[in-house]
Length: 169
Image (tube, rainbow, N blue to C red; front, side, top):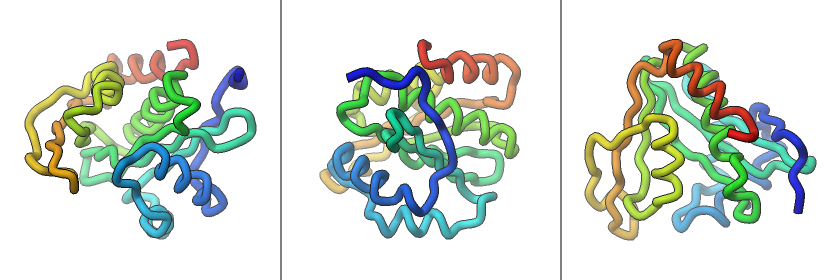
C-alpha cells in the first residue's frame, strides 16, 4: 500500500470523531472514549490543540496537547496501526509543537508507558528526556516515564521541528 506524497495536517473537527475514536481503540490498551474527544472539542482553543493527519483521503493519525501556562502537555498521539512506522506520528507531533510555540509554549512534557519502546524512541528524536517515573500510572499498574523538553521556543529547537516535519525525516 502506498501513501500519498504528503500527509495533510489540519485541526480536528467533529466529523473526525468516528475515525479518531477507531484509531484510538486500535492503538491503545486503555483508549480514550469518544465522549472524551467530544469534550476536548468544547474547550477553548487557548487551552488545547488537536490535529489530524490525512493520507489517502482519510484520517490516519491524530494528536493533541494541553496548555498549562508556557508548558505544553502532550496528551495523545496515535496512528492507525497499518500506517505506523511511516513518519505520521513524527509529523503530527512536530506540527503540534511548532504551533504550540506560536501560542507561547516554551517547554513540552508527556507521560509514556515504560514498555512503549517505539514511542520512547520517537520522543527521544524530539529531545524529550526522562526526568522521573509515575508509579502505577496506568490502570494495569504499569509505570509511566515522565519526559520533558525545555526551551522548545529556541531557534535551534524550531529548526529541529522543521526537519522532523518533513515526510522523509
